[in-house]
Image (cartoon, rainbow, N blue to C red; front, side):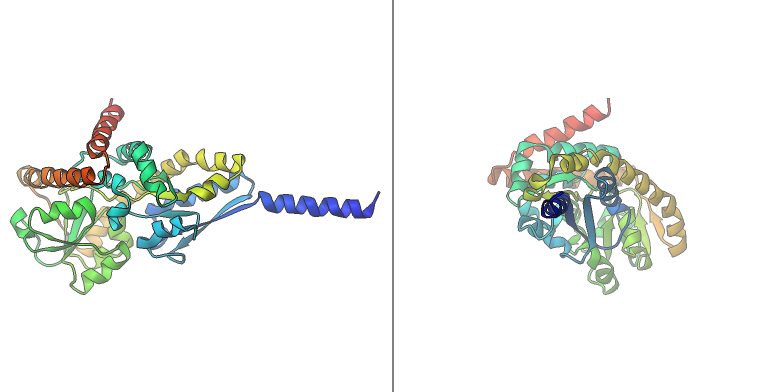
Length: 334
């Protein structure tokens, strides 16, 4: 056998193996928690399905600041990232439809369904393509509520002048009852509350725990339920298109299972919540149905009308997106 030919064949095989390998960098923030478990599971599934040929290196803050993840995706600084629409509403106006207050979404499963419907709308695809981004999956959360310091509110009037860490439509909803929304990131919320920059923080349960908000808090609203922030996972379009058919199939086919894993992990938060309330001595504040409905009536219409006007001015089909959300909710509830 010709030794040179044999060696040449080994080298070619080595290059072929190297070429078949795919390594993606993934930018998230904070620390590993329920909010990132679908990304962790996606990485695990993709690696298993490709025998380790497609790997994801998940970085918690080492690649980018959370407000800059979409920018990083746009220039190909990393291949996958998580961000929240409310961090930069003008950069992703279509998905801010999902942050409108009082949409009536009642479960994480419904949140997944309406998010994916909006993500797959042509206007949304076009919107995110401006940043070379392809929406992959949401990070569903239950309704936000407040953890605050000082005397607990007993009526909507008590929110007058209250400085609340809240972004997007949630912040706008609280502004309708006289509060002062402040847009600090999740990782900044603890210090903002501790230093008195904000009086309360609007989060879902997992974030109140993960970002240690309960350590500062005195009270918790149980049922204001103004809405949620929408935080998608996106991939760089060029990186996605460059995947082999097998690797793309491994990624696409793992999304549903990753989301189911997320739901199972998030359920554990509810088991921990009551114990955490007791541990930190947090006073639960439950508003009457009359007060909760008054909040909805004061905030939902004006915020939605202002949003629709804004969308119309930038040629985004806002009403079409709202109708899609409502139609999707009706469908999943049948």
